[in-house]
Each structure stands twice: as C-alpha cells, then as structure tokens.
Length: 133
Image 1: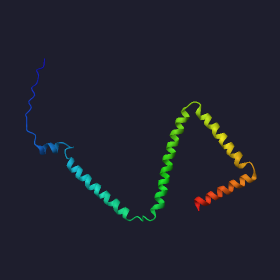
Image 2: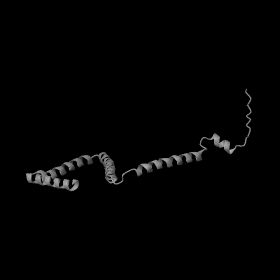
Image 3: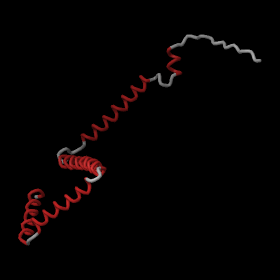
Image 4: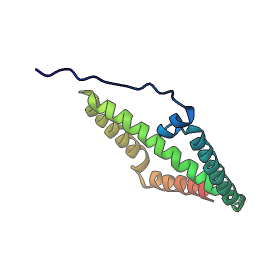
C-alpha cells in the first residue's frame, strides 16, 4: 500500500500589490480610465463632425429618414398581424372574399361609365397637384 503524502503549505501573507498583479481583472480602475479616454475622444470626433454639417438642409433629410423608419416599423407590425391572422383557420379566406367584394364595389362605382372614369382621373390629378405641387 502506498503511504499518504504530506502536503506542506507555507502560509504567506498576501500583499495587495501582488494580488493586483496576479489578478488580470484586478486593474479595473485603469480599464475604466482607458475607456473614459476613448469615450471622450470618440465624442470629440463626433462633435467635430456634427459641427461641420449644414443643418439648414437637414430638415428634408430628417423628414425623409423619419418617414422611412415609420414605414419600416408599420410594415413589421402589419406583417405580424397578418401572420397571426393567417394562423386562424377560416379568417384568411373570408378576408380574401371581403377584399374582392370591396374592390368590385369600388370598381362598379368608379369605373362603370366614361363620365365616372373621367371624374376619377380628375380627382387623382387634383390630389397629385395638392400633395406633390
């Protein structure tokens, strides 16, 4: 049989300077200072870039970006609603039928005679001039 070996551990006091050197995460103060320096450098560069922008022209661009973001969000929401509706067993077929009825009713009311078609073209032209100038 083998004899148990003795373990001899010499207890040494731990010095705070040696604990920080041996622990790779112990230097959080230096990392925080480094992050603050980088953060202030990045903010300075962003501020300098924003100072060079002609803000008088940004009104149209801002509106365009806002409209684009609103359209994207609306389409995501609509897709979620439509996916949920498609999971119901009877509702998608009924909605298709309802859509056909509405399109048929609108077409009958607006495209039946030549005078109705001319009035529709005039309304579309008026709306186009009103909104597009």
